[in-house]
Length: 114
Image 1 (tube, one colour):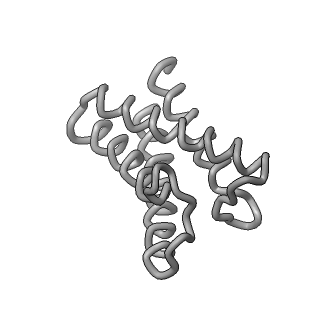
Image 2: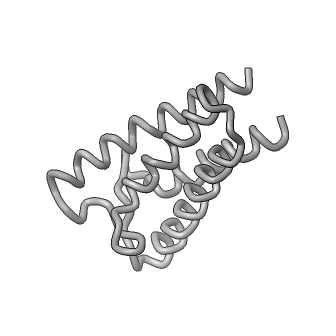
């Protein structure tokens, strides 16, 4: 059951990330940058590493690397969203950095404690 939930969260996150990358390709600067790289690209890679490690590779370093990078990015951009120094893309007026932060936190907790 835990693997199904992990895959569900990861696939939904991957689909949102793909959409954000597509929008950023059409409209550069749609996604905020982290070290001059659009954050949506990094988040996409993070969700992809979680999916690959949970389904095919079964490698915990890849899983935790992806979730920790995603969590840190979510935390970083959520902080800046609150301080109004950077603006995250939104979905129904909800900043997606908050959603990303919660998703990666859940992915970490599911693997650590369940």
